[in-house]
Length: 183
Image (cartoon, rainbow, N blue to C red; front, side, top):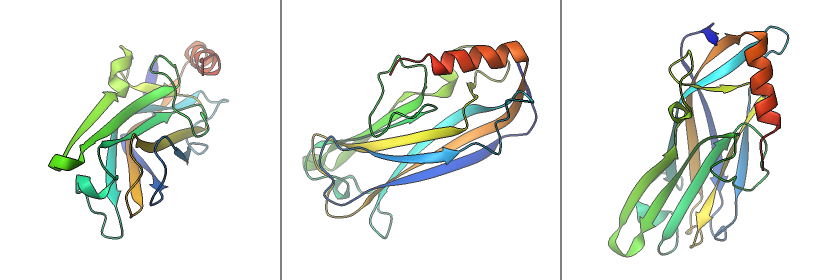
């Protein structure tokens, strides 16, 4: 299906959830893939892994009680179609990875849950990677149940990827699947 044109490299994006952001609100960031994706040559991006990192304040604190006010969660998704400042349902074909940081403020406990990784999408010629033929990725995050606490919270996505070359049939199949995705 795909042949690697590069070794693995990392793409990163950070979105800032401002202090006191209301529960249920979402913030979006964009990762430009225009330099990597090329329709004419069949060049695409193979996403091999995604890690989500949460930090707060100017010291980039990782204490769970510094993220939100009370019990709740911080949730995030990475997609290859623009959802705006919304989350997509788990069966949406554009969903690359998602996760949440569940916070029990009373006991100062946090549980990081990753719902989906690119390698869960089934066999492909490149280590079961998620193939992207769109020219952007979208990172969306926000608080659930409780508001963001008194400091800005930063959600960073660290994405391990490589540039691949697809055959014309594979490119077309991925492009059709991507544009036909339910929102």
